[in-house]
Amino acid sequence: MPTRTSSTDRYTACWSTHALPKNIPCPVINPHSLHGDAYTSTHYGSLGNMQVEVKVWRGCTRDRRTRDRFITHLAKELDDWKRASGHRNVSPFLGLVDGFSWDGLPSLVTPRYLNGNINQYLRANPRANLLSLLNKVGDALTYMHSLSPPVAHGGIRGANILIADDGEPRLSDLCINFLPHAPDFTVAGDELDAERWMAPEILDPAPELQGYYNVTTPESDVYSFGMTMLELFSGSHPARTLSH
Image 1 (tube, rainbow, N blue to C red):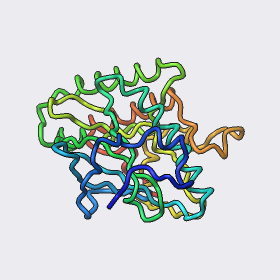
Image 2: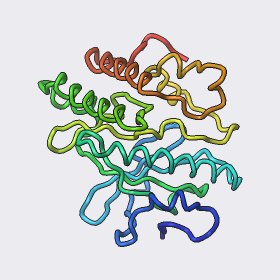
Image 3: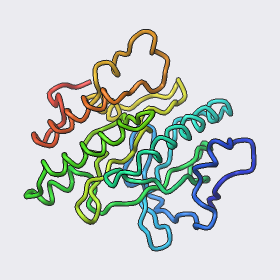
């Protein structure tokens, strides 16, 4: 049965600050993956009466140093996500749990929104006010970027804008789109599609920034938000005629 934090030296104090509270039972998940990409698989689950999603990371070797580096950076990015979650249009995360990943990485529990992401919502509700939804996402980004230090989302696209039961947009997966992975891990073609929303300076960072795992900024968020608006108003991915 999955456990929460581990007392072994696999998990740092930095990681444990984001663990699911001990008075909350571990989620029960569907063993079949809901969706995923090169680095993660996401499962439906339940946490008491709440429906949740559990993001399970993979792609890290069993080398202790590699895992510790991943967890340290994950904890830092979750610090930023937590700071940004004071805005009503930013989805919170519920906490980290242990025991779902075969290679010893923690998994992230977030609320499940039955309306899905904004693309799915617009297909089901073609008369929805897209401009109003985007204004609210823009308000959330303004809030995030005004924090000190500012918080950059790093992965803005339609798939990361979820729609709550009340029809409000919620930015999700803040700051966790550029976590370090094993250098020999092969990236799948569908993961490379995320580059369609990335600013040029992220795709080709300045020499002094090369080697950093995350160089996203509020300015690169603005570019990605522009690509997201193009995606939603056109109904197609940016640069849809280009292939890798």
